[in-house]
Length: 179
Image (cartoon, rainbow, N blue to C red; front, side):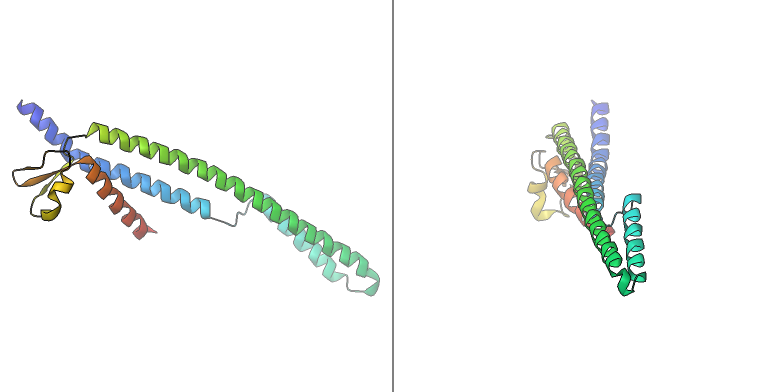
């Protein structure tokens, strides 16, 4: 019986930091994916090639300033405008493709997060995740000890659902500070 209480105490002491670590990891991954999704200005080889061709066409068109070469200069400018339009279409389709892939990653991360939270809730249901002095959480003791049995030796037993809510709020705050 003594070993059983000791193992439960050990599990309780490791549960709070483990849960917080899981929650903050999900928050950091989610924020990282959101930043990558919003990141613009891709500089891949195709975009660089398009910009180089447009620059070259405009340079050639500006060098043709004689009245006899006006038609050729106008043709080069129209060709440069067509290339710019092609570049804009390429960038738009590329950004849509990237956003769709990041949206997929975010959805998978969200589903994994929900599944992990569900497993944590099932695992720690009616088991205290942490213990906090009753004086520190005086008005909120019953709320924090929801479904875990209340108080023991002037310590509030914190349940998994309040701990997940608290960990999520704190991890969002930490992630905002890290931005």
